[in-house]
Structure formats: C-alpha cells, structure tokens
Length: 282
Image (tube, rainbow, N blue to C red; front, side):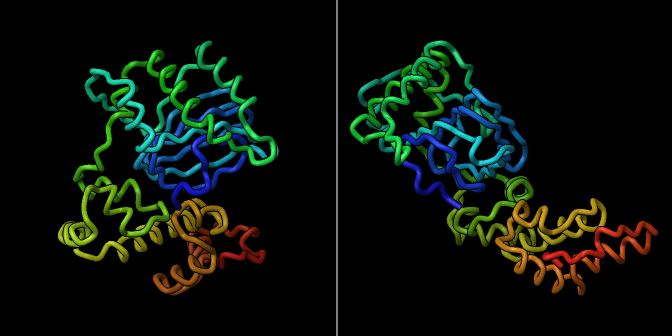
C-alpha cells in the first residue's frame, strides 16, 4: 500500500498500517505509541519522540494504543519541494548514508518550539494545513533539522532511484510486505522484466510463487510451533484477508491451519482446548 491521502502537512491519528514510503516523512508522536517495522528492525516511537522515515522503503506501522489516544504530526517532503528548496538554499555537503529506515531526531528546544507552533496553522476540521503555509513551514522545518544535524542535508538531497542490489538479501527481508512485483522490482533497482529474469536465475522459480511459498512456510511454523491463530498474523505475512490465506494454506499443505495445528499437537501430545473453538482462519 502506498502513502495516499496524506497532504504535505497533516495532524491526527489517520495513518494506514502498511505503506510504501515514496517520500521522506517527518513524524512527531504527540500522543500514543507506535511500532515501525522495516523488514529487518522494529523501531518503537513513544509519545513526544520524533523521527524521519526514509523514502523508497516498505514500512509497517502498529499503533499500540486506541485510535482516540493516538495523535501525530506528519510532514511529507516530496521530491519536487526538496528540489525547489535546494535551489534556494544551495550547500556543499557530501551524501551521507543512514543505514536504518528510521532516523531518530533529538527533541531540541528550537524544534519543539516549532512543533508547538504548528497548531495555529491547521484547520481543526480537516486536520490539514492551509496550502498557503505548507511550503513555508516545511522549509522552516528543514532549516531547523539541518542546524540540529547537518548530515541530514545529504539524505534529503539524494534524488536517485534505488540502485541494483542483491536479490537474496532483499527478498528474504521484504517478502512479508504486501507489494506488487513492480514495487519489488523498483526497490531492488531493476525494471520489472530484469527483476523477473534475475529472480528466476537466483531462485529457479517465479517471484510470485516464491513469495507465496515463503509466506506459507512461515505461516506453518507460526501455527504449528508458535501456536498462533491465523487471525493474529495473516496481515503481517502480506495476505490481504483470511479467506485468501486459508485457501492458499490448504492448497499447499492439504489441510486447514486448524487441522495443521491439531496434527502437530497430537504428535507432540500437547493438545490445547483453544483450537477446538471456531477459528475464522481455519
């Protein structure tokens, strides 16, 4: 899922659980907690914490509190805005590599004063900032961030698309994300045709089949070894709904997730009454 519906400046609880981050995003958690999974690491953001999520990354968000108790300020730095910014503010700074998808920002006084002032610019009904001020306030934020950490200039001024990377490491890290093959190809630094060709050379099967097999093997492990219900993990494995997951699982293994759990329980003599209840993922 891509970032859609987010204006350049947004305040409120609204953010979808899984997104492909096309642009750099600034997050300030006003209230609540959030977990951010980037395929490799899980980052926790607490109330009053600040971060930048780097562009061209698949990201999964998990709010650990109720929606009514979750509130953020989100500013999106799209490429066209950044290019205009660097025309007005030229600099000499080598590109700096930030390894993690999430870059934590210290809550320094100037930054916090800026964030506290934003409330005056937001429409209370739409939770969006008037477009008259959006560019001005984003520009102000960048100038503050660069004063806090000048190395961020190298991050924000990097406009190239992802370069060609190792498919094995990339796919093992990201197969759980619900993305189309075009997006996998782009993030791996390839055209779709080159991605399919390189994928078959590497894995000896098509990407669609390999991704499904990996997800189902992980699902089998979670059901039989971790004793988890499908409803607890099917979204985290990239399945869109329980019905799709259950059909695919039974087609591969010959029995439903509930039957797989029972088979394993009988073989290990660890029969749990919980699985005797009706499970929508069976």
